[in-house]
Amino acid sequence: MPSPTLIPVVLCGGNGTRLWPLSRGALPKQYLSLDGGPHSLLQRTVLRLAGLGAATGATVAPPLLVCNAEQRFLVAQQLQDIGVSDARILLEPAGRNTAPALTLAALACEQTSQGDAVLLVLPADHHIGQPGQLHAAVGQALGAAAEGAMLAFGVRPERPETGYGYIRRGAAVGDGVWQIDGFTEKPDAATASAWIAEGQHFWNAGLFAVRADVWLRALSHTRPDIAAACRRAMQGVQRDLDFWRPDGEAFAASPSDSIDYAVMERLPAQPALGIPARMVALNAGWSDVGAWDAVWALSPHDPQGNAVIGQAVLQGCSGTLAISSSGRLIAGLGLRDTVVVETPDAVLVADRSQAQRVKELVADVRAVRPELAEAHRHVHRPWGWFDALDRGPGFQVKRIVVLPGASLSLQKHTHRAEHWVVVRGLAEVTRGTEVFRLGANASTYIPPGEVHRLANVGSEPLEIIEVQSGSYLGEDDIVRLDDPYQRGA
Image (cartoon, rainbow, N blue to C red; front, side):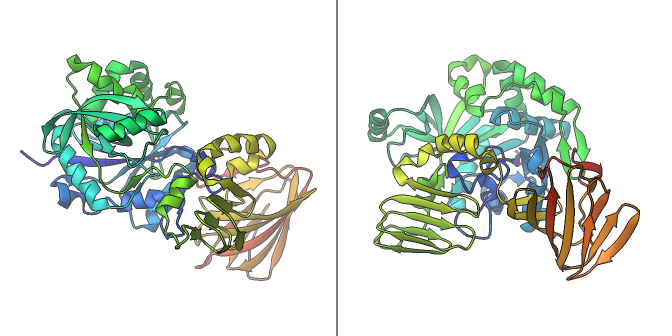
């Protein structure tokens, strides 16, 4: 029997609200490094695929990533930074949970004659401390998936966790493969404790293995509304630069549902469908990194149980997580089981036992300061990034960095003027009918309503200080006349 083709499908959705203020709507946790290391959770998810083919005997295809359309350039840049150039990136026009996201991936495989490939479904925001054990679990799942089963990966519980879904393991049906007898969502503490003692319940890790055509057949039976909407969306798919863009209007008609609810949890009760529900155990140091207490648990601790990322001095503290993301010093005195997370524009201080409630806190933050729930002061753009340094009535100051060879869109603003001062690099400025260059220490002025563009024509990053002034300084005061990144106005 030829070796099956295995396609890793990395799901990049989710907003990671419980990890605010580091994780925000425009930059969720999968694009962040939470331990100060060089790689984001997404990058680590892709990097741990190395060696998967040798470990499983499968032909491992390049990964297929499904991400929010607004974050496509961030995903592409993070892949480029780790040397991955052959991935396919599918763009979700709107967030519809994991079942429609996986369906887009399965339909893309169908369109490229890979309908019989086994899809390894991997959330982009999980931690796996032992990739080799993940590879071993995938190897156990691969044969059953290739034969038409759908497999979930179960983690043996370490504590009576009430925030996870559980899989009840049934009889063994193969080497390391078990029948699934049922699923239960978020039991109470007493029930979870009893299940740990019983030994037949596992945390549902949110990783799956299933053939593309099997997934489509199952979904067409259990959620034909999702299947139909996604199929219409992929019939209208367009290639946009390096991206696959499904039809937005068709995809928006899809209901929102998870892989578990839409299909996986229904299979044990529908044997006539002919798709067995199976489980393999995942003993790989898994965590969904779902809240700050999980980050604390994964981080190195000092003898008092404190975890520090960035600059912090803790005196008389124990069980405390301190994260400084801006370089500012956190000084803690007498803290017990506390979380302190510092960013340039917001600071979280919380009892570690209340970490799961940060999502509720963010809802209150959004009501008072909605911009702090959605975006960082440091904002990524396809051409580079900017940092909003200061603002007041009628003015705003930004530090703008443009990557070599990149340029902003040809644009104009109705309500604001802009003053640019080049700090380093070589800028090419379009202002009306003029095109000229500016080096370090040179400056220019863009009046309201003037068509303009900024480009980096040098070999190093271009850095400028921009001072905006006017009656309205919102990011939506922009009319793009020509955009190399094909964004809307």
